Image (cartoon, rainbow, N blue to C red; front, side, top):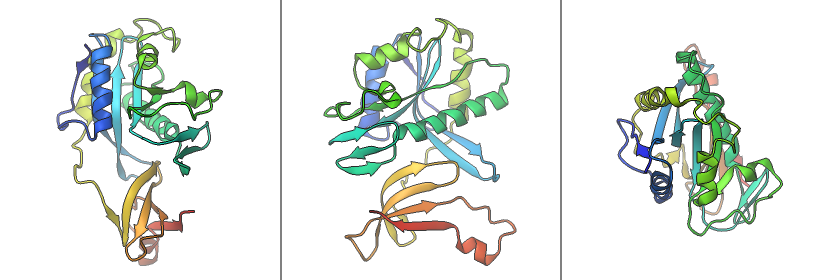
Length: 254
């Protein structure tokens, strides 16, 4: 059974899907692996504004560091390297956000510990809903190979160093240090999930980038309409009232 190392502020899985993922990995992975769930890393962006990045699950193994983005999606799922559709509605390909998070995390570690040679962080997406499958994903695309349901293929991908072309014990001396660093850097999760933005009710967070967070929203007085609302972090220092007014962008969802 793998070792679960919870960040100081973690008080359990955010949803049933993350719990299924954590339960599965903790039982199936070797007992010298570390699993870090619900890790929240604060990063200062290029505009000197603090932004918080949430990591569903990080696995520290003797050969590599893995970042897992979990989606507990039911219903029909289709997609390739470019576009994904859930029950016929386009959703952001989760690999794009997951890959960005992995690069940000790697940069965070390297900036503080340039002597730690842990290689590229390996990114994958898990589909934890028990009724979900990869049937609708294009098997010829790259993201197909890094998308997993909770099964033996996921365990093999994480535990077999040859699958990811890594040395068997390449980062074994760094495992404890990496685990302690990541759990120590994690900040308190903001449990009160945001439900509104201006006069819009948030239905779903669609994507998160270094520049903005995009939500699918319902206007307060038009329940049949849907809008994509992008919220940009704003450095208010030395900004005019006109510049402050332009802190968000909204467009109608098709």
